[in-house]
Length: 485
Image 1 (tube, rainbow, N blue to C red):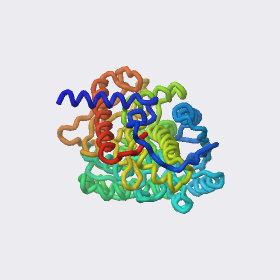
Image 2 (cartoon, rainbow, N blue to C red):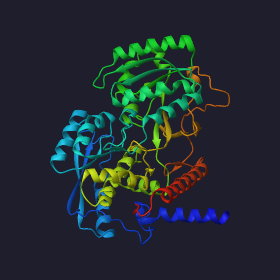
Image 3 (tube, rainbow, N blue to C red):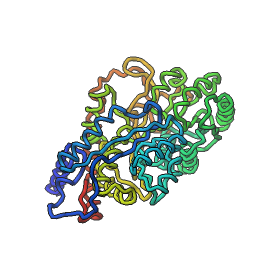
């Protein structure tokens, strides 16, 4: 048994080091395996990129040249092919309608594969057009369960909010939340997340005490905040202090908080967020005092912290001076999967590439981890990181990273550091302890806390081992005679 374990570990280590880490199985595939496919790739092959903003907010322009260079080096120097991938960037200026116009423009320029469309509202806007015109779309951020449709041209490299809603509810259960009042965007993302949260809430013992839905085009929220205050007041009268606000918003949360400052009840209530604004500077920049008062325990899907992630993070920091985000890393993998799918298809035809994407993704271990897709073309699984607003090492108001991890498959919440909830009169369940977060004195190296480093390294090894074991099993069962990336 011991020899077998070490043999598997050796295979894992070999796979991690292949080809600069951008593909799996290429070097280890049997030399007798061949794939017959139509030939037709030559000249310049365009991949469209539609970013959500006018200057790429929440995305990573620093990766543009890096991505294109690495992909074309692989094509020219490893595959020895004579075609070139060209990334064509468009900006949707936060408008779903404009996202559709940009896709139409790219289609007229010959684009049959496009990545980006980070917001679910943008994916929803382009879905019909993409399906009708056979354009493969790979989104790095859309999570709405409403868009989980089998056999369409839309692929998403993040898990749907079926998982995030359960991750949030696992935290509520862990902390002893009795009831919540929802406030959320009335769009594909907000409606989808709120719907799943309400559907699963009874399973986790959480009551929905009310909800406030607002227009995604709104810029002023005084009416909604007043309604939220009334609902929270009524809920506390019924359920006591263990009542929370659960938000599904984007960066308009800063304005909502500024207007909520007029209500003592709201400022003395625990708030929860989600991936809509977790880690966003606008929250701690534009409404710092309100944010730290209300804490904003928030979730975002967790990339696998493998050797590839660490290598990617180091390069990203060397270019930008900042740590990469989960969705920026998913964008990186989305572009690579788009390029590899085109290469594997051997022809720039959306109908052909659509059938190749799931095979490439299911056998691709990227910077975010194993990119296995489910039957709807969405990322099949992920755990969730937890962040909240507290005081950083310098005593400034900031997001506290890696506060906890939610194991979605089991509902387990593992806290590294927990906010102090006693100021809300909050009663924690037996066995759950609260630790006040002030100014940590633990030095950090490369984003890791020295205190938790042994645990974190152990988890990394476990994640790598588990992921590659599943890949090896999947390859052995599902794919014979197909060249794997």
